[in-house]
Amino acid sequence: MADSIQIDHFLSKEERYKSLVPQIKALTANESNLVANLANIAAALKYSMGFFWVGFYRVDANAQELVLGPFQGPIACTRIALGKGVCGTAWKENKTIVVPDVHQFPGHIACSSESQSEIVVPVASKGTVHLVLDIDSNQLNDFDKTDEEYLGELSEYISTNLL
Ligand code: SME
Image 1 (cartoon, rainbow, N blue to C red):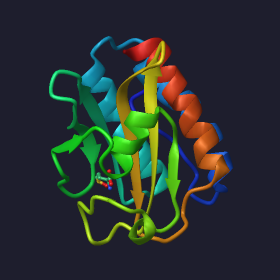
Image 2 (tube, rainbow, N blue to C red):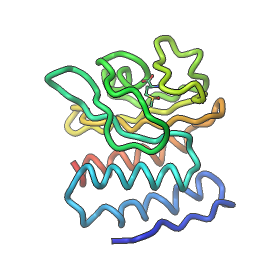
Image 3 (cartoon, helix red, strand yellow):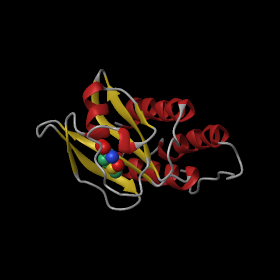
């Protein structure tokens, strides 16, 4: 496996994603443990892209809740009900949600007062969501189509290869 991720921080966001996504695939391809892979993906995204908080919530189908999984950043809410907050809504609707200003999202769950904008990308297989990838920024309006595109590619990769 790769033992480090190399990203030039002077690159544009799109160029950083283009460099990062193949490195994440190489880092995880030969490891079968899901938690280990999600932990490394969270660290790679946080430290390569400079986000405030990056983590996964895993679906507990019996409880109908998301449960906090591997993450990087300040401590966070451990359980989120189906349909609640940005994460629970992305899970319920099985769609990516970009929130330019978390204070304007009805029902947003504030795990940290520093979070200003957020993107949540579901990881689904055959229409069933198994995880959500949640990324918070401490700046307003920090996520756009570029994040949706490359995080969507990562979600597909996780779903096809790592679940
Ligand atoms: N803001 C999320 C909760 C998770 S934290 O951001 C880490 C939400 O509204 O679902």
